Length: 162
Image (cartoon, rainbow, N blue to C red; front, side, top):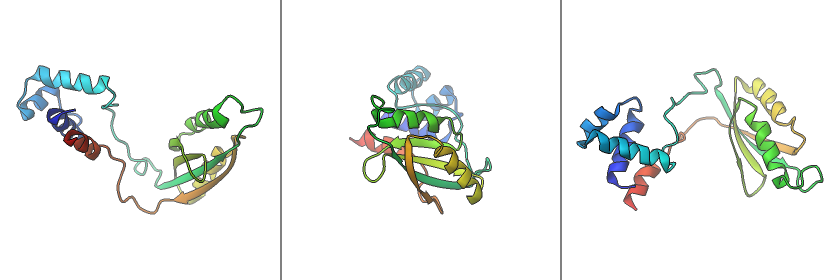
């Protein structure tokens, strides 16, 4: 990435519905240059999508929680499946309230960010998660407020400086 890529990312992060022609006008470069740069950023995996950013809260899911899952390890049933991580990942992907899940180090094997309609509904979501036999136990932390929302644009700016 170079400075032009960084400016292009900033521009589309601020206004993702902007057209290529408008971006070229604002950046002072040819339309073909903007299109080629966007194509390169998509092909290299830097830009992963153009969809709208959605608010779980506005969709009726104001409760966010983080589940630390312990996964059954090295049993005959899960041998050859990375200790059940893939099995658990497929199970979590089928639950709409699971926004993301990551295999982790430390206390626990997998971390999942989930949303719910209320604290009572959170119990329903946790129960859905725990239906997978490969999950031994879960601990839950409820988010009270978002101090820094998920973001990658500052990281892209930093990458341009390197």
